Image (cartoon, rainbow, N blue to C red):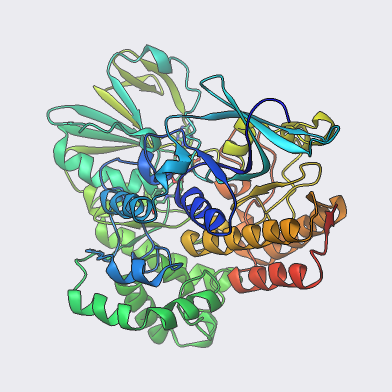
Length: 535
Ligand code: N01
């Protein structure tokens, strides 16, 4: 073929998904070229360096399991790993398996195009990068991340601000010092909730602009006792096996009881214990919290009472109290979030009814009042799940644009592939469990499935695999049905694309749980890649 080397696989992104893809595909004998917009591996963890950035899945689970030596040698120091520790971990993985040589850093993929076979040249993908170069491969794996495209709201006057502004998902690498400054934080999702308490400790004053209050449960972070860690390591295999049976790919046994089947006193005791000990898993304290509105209300009321206990000012507590079902929007895990509002240097501005009017050089204007600030932190989230894919707008068979194809909402069979885009795979694509489960375990399952599929194609002398339109439609219908059974489908949130103006609605991740999803993926393979066309 003219035009230089054709790789077996192009991998887009070098976060947890891209790094494991490079490792796995190389091991399976494929030549791999990966591209990463950042200066190092890590993906979302490379970019999110804001104060308090920390994972809300426990470190012993939020880690790879593909290599036992790796999991035995790495020493997590805290129950929930901080961003710097996760960054060191993923960097260690890249070094240990010599993965960097296949990754081109500081290089963003801006376009991807499928080229049909012509003459004796087989079909292939051509990707274009922001340095104007192109690269070709038989397969393309989009490991571009689900929370990797920051969303910066289009507030009038945003660019006129005279001070410094930051997005939590694009935090500078050098230290940001807020000492003596008046700081605005816009947004009270996980990123806002983690960063506000630490910014408040440093800044002269923090003004939080809140549109929607969220439920936050205490992280209960602590140093990991070395004995505890060795005990985990001695039975890591068992723990990982149990995780794979867990609904969220975590090794927790599902609570068997309904919240409505126990006495008020027992329910309260259970909530107290889960509030104290279980972080994000609080929403699993009873079996039906995510499925039954009445059961859910008991948990929501418990957290609402906690907010009232933790926040001294009654009116402030009221403003911080969510009125929707718990877990419907992504729950947050915090350290000292609610008590931060008892500090004299923290003000909450409720912008639910009266949105931000404008940003002016000296601050933020709401309802005619100027809140004078020296710096603005946008903790305003992401164009989740589809944002990074659509930013590249891959074009498939006959020049079909992914943006056009997904104009009414994304369609992807098992969240792995989409009709019209042969040999293009997505890791954590729309319709996969992705953000609803332990992402690292989900990523390993996805990448293993994709790698096995490529081996299948190679070993049988086939040229391409493509999701059938009917199978992705059926998967979308199934996904909607499962979402409707869960209270998660009841709220407008980034799960449904509602945070991005103009984004089509529909529940983006698969809500049916990890085991059901894996079973379906395995069944598809057993049935000869049912629902895919192999040519
Ligand atoms: O983003 P978000 P995030 N004017 O979308 C507000 C993961 N994560 O970066 O809710 C005013 O949750 C918006 O208001 P509203 C985790 O999965 C994990 O915090 O749209 N406000 C909301 O309050 C998480 O869920 C970890 O009304 C505006 C906030 O900005 C996901 O990433 C840590 C606005 C955005 O919240 C995203 O979290 C961090 C506007 N125009 C993130 N536009 C851990 O592992 C938006 N907002 C712990």
